[in-house]
Length: 161
Ligand SMILES: Cc1cc2nc3c(=O)[nH]c(=O)nc-3n(C[C@H](O)[C@H](O)[C@H](O)COP(=O)(O)O)c2cc1C
Image (cartoon, rainbow, N blue to C red; front, side, top):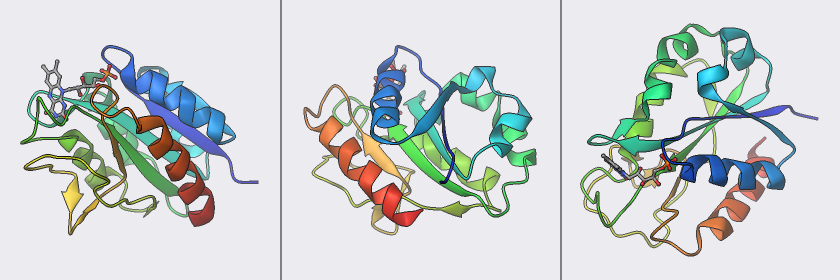
């Protein structure tokens, strides 16, 4: 069975809560990225990288501090999926944008779990490329159906494993 690790950063707990929910839908280990060492990135077949956006579409700071470690990890043969948390109403010009910063760090891995815009209203997101989010984007405060989106995504990831 594929080993799945969820690495998350959180400012106020929304992303942590979403990751705990997602972990309950997958058989997955969950780690705050601030506690992760380089060896942790190598332990899994699928890495789920989760972050809220802060600033103007930037990763939460715990992830900023670990990007170089992630970039130096040899992720050949592994799969990566990206979970972005944001707020479409307050940040319509950078909705869930921060997670685009993962892309240069995971070049050796295969990115899975891209999704279409599932009913969100925003003007721009750095993580929405060629008509798709590079992973799953959720708005835990402005979208009552976010858990249903996580349910659907968990099934998608299992199918793409
Ligand atoms: C100062 C600040 C900047 C933010 N910038 C963005 C942003 O650029 N894009 C976005 O989608 N959400 C943005 N947000 C919203 C957060 O990403 C959102 O509240 C999220 O649920 C926080 O998750 P957390 O509790 O895991 O930290 C921002 C929030 C704050 C307080």
